[in-house]
Length: 258
View 1 (tube, rainbow, N blue to C red):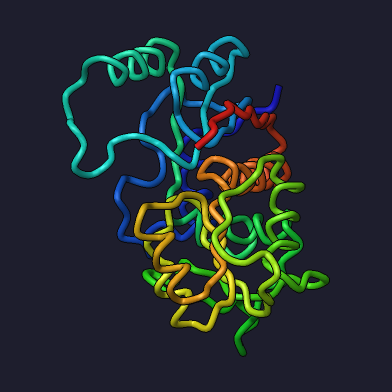
View 2 (view 1 turned 120 degrees about the horizontal axis):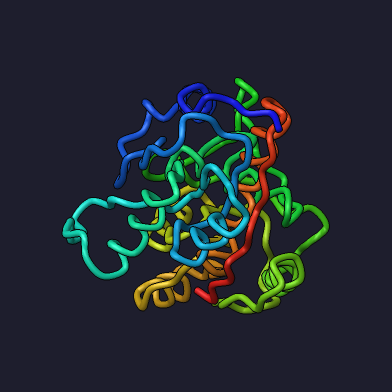
């Protein structure tokens, strides 16, 4: 089986995702160092105990995720679930690669780019040919939903493509022209999407104030699920690794209703 050096893969990922550009809530890159050579990777949304156990069962050398460990302001003590996860990784010499904001933002492999592909959204582009963005860290993408004219039609497309019924706020018959989207827990960016002229905003989660803001501004809001909107970036990144290095990368979807 073909293998590559762990540090070679780490360098390629950091360069591809331009991790140095981002001030994030967690470390991006190789979070836990395991064996020195990698021939098989298990990819998933979150480095949960369930995903790690799949990696151990399938004798993988590394785990690649969007949601890793060591988040700012969390309890740093190694006990409970954290102890269990770390024990699994260290005992089986698993490398853990995690990319948060860099994977959200990447113009081809990122979560926003891949959600647009899945939902059939057409991103706007600037003069540089890159997606037009707005909001904090320019994480919100702007575009349109070709072939769809109302919020109800857009919500129906989301339900069909993501295989779950989204939370939808707004009149289903209201027109939808400009669409904004940002995967995950980006409900706090709704005001930035409104400022950018969006008729509808798609993200993963919703908070109590989100509903009021959407109603009072007559902006369509779709909360499609944090996990559901972020399944696709890590799959695209895994496919890019497999193509570039010729090693095995397998995506495992540990279901999460949030």
